[in-house]
Length: 256
Image 1 (cartoon, rainbow, N blue to C red):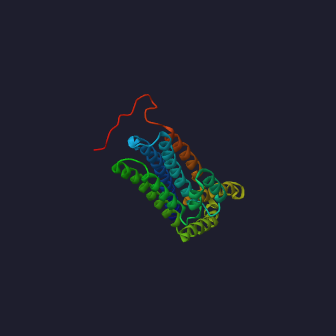
Image 2: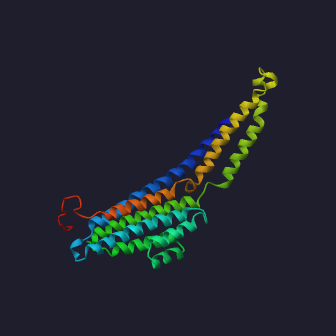
Image 3: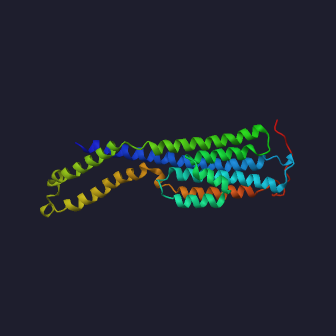
């Protein structure tokens, strides 16, 4: 009689946990797309006719790329458990950012927001039409939306009483199940077939419950460091491209 109720609890548990993991992965996927999009637009929309030298142009685009990676890395650190990779984070930030910018990021109460502010400053300093600049700022706003969605998942876990109730329900169910199956295995000597059956069922059903527990905290199992490393490689690669380096000279156009 209790089996349908237990099944519903397990299904709800795993579906809820998988939904949290899926949303977290989609947020990171959107963040990856927006970082690449942001640097690509900054590189393409940069007004080279504004009188800046090629070296200054490259420095500006590199700075935007670096600020973009900084946000992703700060977001990863912000969503990780306290002290998990603080040392590695500080080492990467101090190595790749200018000293004053690195200090401001490390000392900020909310590091991802500080990184977004630096990114906005970097975009504002780019010579381009204001409509194009606003389009890039739209990508920055989407990064902030992704951060807020991840923070909601981080600060709103599945209620503890639900997890505990499911564990208790499962334990009591397995404790009483041998009494219900004893006669079923009477064809074996002293119902000894009940032992391997109970062992297999226990591993399978408790495994499902453990699966939900692991998926409940998606930021502990997502490869966020790998995401950040790939973002750094991609944005630096995009920043290294120059108009006309594919053999097709870029025509000067003005937005209408």
